[in-house]
Length: 551
View 1 (tube, rainbow, N blue to C red):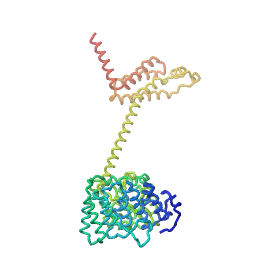
View 2 (cartoon, rainbow, N blue to C red):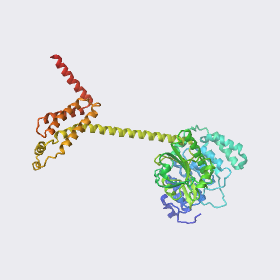
View 3 (tube, rainbow, N blue to C red):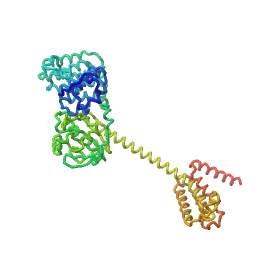
View 4 (cartoon, one colour):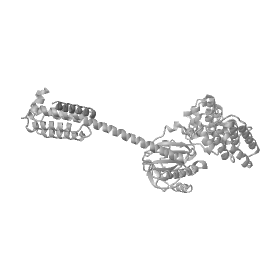
C-alpha cells in the first residue's frame, strides 16, 4: 500500500477528475469519506468503473479494496440506481470477500428493498461460501487484530434479512443451503441463516416479486461511457488464432459481428471462461436461426503480449469454440490501446498485467460500428440473436425507406424536367435565330445595335434541328402516360413550319407565326394536368358534336 499522506484540508480539495494513478489510497479513501456527507453519487459511480485512471498501475488486491470501499459507502449515503449493474455483477461473479461484502452493504442504502437483487445475493453465497474471511469497513486501513469484524456471508445474510418479504424468492435456496450445506457453515453463520429465513417468512408485506425487468435495468449501465464509442480504424492490424495477419475491415465489415473480450490468464471462471462458453452457445443459436452466412463471431484478448496465436487456439479448442472463417479469436499486437478506446473497454492494467475487467459483449453492424453492448452480465444467446434480427430488420426497413425516398425525389425531378422541358425548349426553339435575317432582327429587337454586325454562323442550322428533334423525342416519350398523342402531333406540325423557315434561309417568313403558335400550344397541352386536359378534351368534343348535330 502507498503511504503518501496529505493534510485533511488538502485531501478535501480533490475532485473525481483529479484522481489518477498517482493518487494515494488514503487520498482516495478520504475522498470517499467526504462524499458520504455530500451525497455526490455521480462522482462515486465513475469510480466504480474498472477503466477509471485511478486504478491504473494498481495491484488486483488494491483495486478490490478501493472499489469495495466506494461501494460500501452507499449504505450510508443512499443507493444510486446507476450503481446496480456494478453491484449485481460483483455479487454474481466475484470471489473476493471484501468486494462481495461491500456490495451487500451497499444494497441496504436503497430507500426500498429491490426484490430482484435477492437472486444475486444467493449466487454470491455459493461463490463466497468456501472463501469467506473476516473483514472490516470501520476504516479504510483497519488495525489488526480486529475488535469488530464482519464477513461476506454475514453481510449477504443481513441484507436478505433486511429485505424481508422482498427476498421471498430466495427462500428455497436458503433452505437448501441450511439443509444441504450445513457442514460447510460455522455455528455463527448457521444462526444468522436461521434468523434470515425467519425474518423473511414472518414479514407480512405484500410484494410483487415479478415487477422488475433486470435486463431493462442493465441496459442503461454506464451511459456516460457508451457515449464515447468510436468507429475502429479500418486498417487496425489483427492476428487470428492461426497466425494469419489481417486488417479490421477485412473481418468486421460486410457482415454483422458478435464481439467479446477475454484473456487466457483470467483466474475467474465466471468471467473469461464462461464468456467463451457463452459465445459458443451464441454460435449455435446463430446457426439455428439461419443466420450462419450473415453473422460472424470474434473473441479478442485483452492480453496480446502473453496470448500468442497458439495460446488462443488452444484456449478456444479446450472450450469447444467453433473455429472457421467466420468464427475466430484475435490478438491486437501493437494497437490494442486504440481498440480499447474505441470500445471504451472496462479493463485496467498493472503494467502489462490485467488487474480487473468487466464482462462485455458488443454487436457490430456491416460497417463495423457498435450498435449494441451488453455489459457486466453474461447475455442469453437467444437475446443476442433476437437483437441482431431486430437490427437487421430495422436496417432493411430504413434502406427501403431511403430507396423509396430517393425514388420519389427522382420521379419528381423527372416530372419537373419533363414539364419544364416541354415548355421551355419549344420557346428556345421558337425564338432561336434560324437564318441571317432572324439573327439581325433579334439583335435589333433587343437593342444590341452594336452587335448587328456579328455574322450568322452556318452551325446554327444543325443546332436548331437537334433542338427540334430533342423536343419531339421528349414529347413522344411522355405522350402515352400524360395527355396522349394530340399534343405531340400539334408540336410536330409547329416544328414542320419552323423548319420551312430554316430550309428557305429566311426567304419564307410566313411560317414563323403558325409554327410558333402550334409549338407553344403543343407544349402547353402536354404540360397540363391529365384530369384538366381530359375535361378540356371532353368540352371541345361535346361542343363539336353538339354544333354538328344542330346543323
